[in-house]
Image (cartoon, rainbow, N blue to C red; front, top):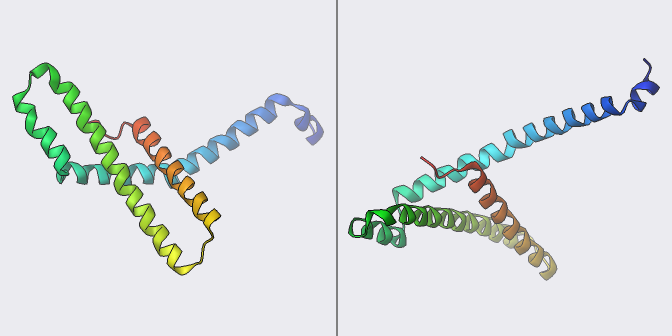
Length: 137
């Protein structure tokens, strides 16, 4: 078979494209997603070790409520952990932007785009946290 035959073989081209996509997916997973998940897990563990007062309050009422409600309360606490983690990550992102803003003059249109990007990053983080089930024991 020559190169012309290979280029006309749809199955071969489809196989090559799928292999290339798998390589890109694996590289992206290793370079970014795994590191992001590890960082999110570390931040979540830190919140669980040093919970904010809202989480402490919810935890303190657990012994005084019916056992049937404990599972819902635990899910509520998990939700608070997720939001607190996202809030802490957003603070880090904003502090990085503050440093960048002091070095470079940025026009207002760019700042609006930057705020949109922060929101997209937070949504992506939330998606990967929920998808990766980072908060399960």
